[in-house]
Amino acid sequence: MRVRSFVTAALLCAVLTVPAYAEEPGPRVPVLLYHAFSEDRVPRERDPYDLHVTVEALDKQIRGMLDSGYTFISFDELYAWRTEGRALPEKPAILTCDDGYENCWRLAFPVFQKYDVKATIFVIGEQVGKEGYFTWEQARRMERSGLVTIATHGQRHVDHAKMSPSKAAREIGAAHAELVEQLGNPDRLKVMAYPYGKCTADTRSAVAKQGFAVQVLTRCGRAYNAGKTPLTEVNRIKCWNGLSGEELVRAAR
Ligand SMILES: [Zn+2]
Image (tube, rainbow, N blue to C red; front, side, top):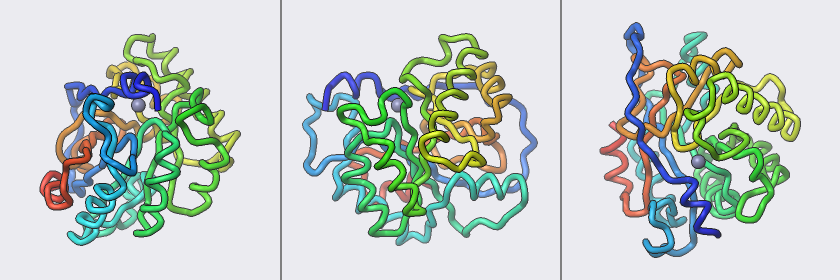
């Protein structure tokens, strides 16, 4: 896989202000952030941003979470809790993968199936099917498993904070429309993740007006506080290869 892919996928944990939001009781939901997967450890010089997690490490991290009582849910379930008061499992967690790399389909998806774990994969519209990325057909097959939700990561892997909010919203809306055309289910919940986590309050507001009720950031930290933080500002926990299952469970609290 080309180094450029990882440079463009560099993680930037943006510090953003949290707008006023009525705090109410809600679960803390660790939202795990993955990018690429590998069979063997990828040397640091070929992966400067530490974006590859081996199948073995992914397996241990998922098993650690499951052994601690976590249940992996979809954003649909979190949204139904927020909007309809539907019940959530006692310890909900969400697993996300950004960019839609081919190794996500080839290496991570079998692990999701092994443990019957739900995951959301954010794809870059113009990259789907290109070298190093999975195809729409592979995306369809993952969705058909009932475990994976494919959602948009924008049409291009660019900084949406540098565009006008309306242009960013139009691009993300178009990327979602193409995804629906390819994968069906036009009533699917509009969930998106910003490339590099880059957005402004105005971007989020414009994107929300396009119907994106769930917006996922690269703001890294602890578990997403669903009772306090809006669904348009979902923060995540970065998972890297050296993280043990126990360490992840501690970080997820
Ligand atoms: Zn990305």
